[in-house]
Image (cartoon, rainbow over the protein chains, first blue to last red):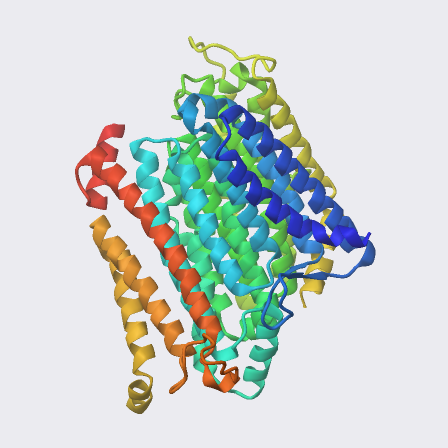
Length: 497
Length: 124
């Protein structure tokens, strides 16, 4: 049993080694290694999750020889291991689901490089989830950015290059702010480990020292991470990068990369600054307003869009708005709703991207709505999967989107009136807008029409069909058994303190 | 207020550099100027860290002549952070430059807005 506590460290090192090894392999072996490694990481995370649930405590794991205030640490509780398990499942499904397109869209000699980037991304996500050291978190944020940029531009055409450049510029602005915030925080507390910083920050607040630098540091860190995770006014890079990159990349980027930053932000709220100090600092009000704007404007842009992939991408902007709106409620219920929404959005959005590609395949590779008419009949399984994803995003019962909306609404009712009203109104308006564009698409793909496009039977693209079925199972499981997951999130947040 | 600025002039310069770099990265249209802005921004941060770690009258944290007293040396951690940060910024700059080269080969311009316009025309 005690041995299980090594597993988070193993999974980070395993993925990193795999990415180094696959750079020397050919595409076929790199792919096999990638599948094995990500499944192993899933199993290791599941074992670590089991350990934390059974013993009901969190573990601190010393990295290297030096003890606490100087050395580097990994720390994991229920929420971290649950997140790692979920991320590895979604990563595996996304990579498998877009496999056929990787063959078509990449140069053959580049295929192993794709898996290098995927492994590197996975290792940086795991490190972001587990680390207890702020500067390590910064370094892995940068690794995450670089590998995500590689995933966008590996399919080399004008659009992806431009999108990757825009993504890099926005990300670099975000990480510059984050780094400066960390430096100020280090300057006033003298520590880099999260638990030590929290003690010092509490002391500083109690003695009313360094009030302004502390606020500046909080603002820099929060704004930096918000920019990186594409909160509403900073989302200009997002539609192009998700719309033109290959299917797996779009699924991974939308469901995992931005979520890693958001999870780091939650960790910083609870483990570095302390939630009371964050709520007093008023920065959450800013997130609240931008989150609400994102919910509305993201959906409006999605309605105007005439390209299915870009429409799903704009829907991501709206969903990230939901998550930040939950932070802005300034209650634990809001944070729990946001974390659940991370899960539900990741499960549904990756599914939508993978199935949207299945639909465009039977429409002559066109992403325009007009050509997609009747695609649901030509590729039955992709049509069903897309419909499930759309229903989940709209918030129909049985699917995870419904649960997260209900959690947001519950959290919204329990706060003061000046927050409750905007929350509930924007939830309602945004749900209606979601319904408009998702149902428009679903009706479009199920409108019977005579075309020359060929039908695809599910057997012809077996791996993609199996992945689609697994995605549907994952979504329905998240929607139907949400209670244990919400309880796990609750106990995980309790372990943060 | 100005006393604080003068006594901490190093930090003040660092913040100024950061702001100049930030503005350039955000507002310049030219990609190369954007990258220069990025490097300004990172350098500002490293100067800030180095200023924070420096203690007047002490040596660099390398043991010389067998002096092992803590009070003889400055804090080594900020220097270590600066080194790590430099590695990160070098790799990010390399990636940005390679992207710029690819874009220039394709569109023969370094102006981001112009590239966007060309892309929109291609789509129609």
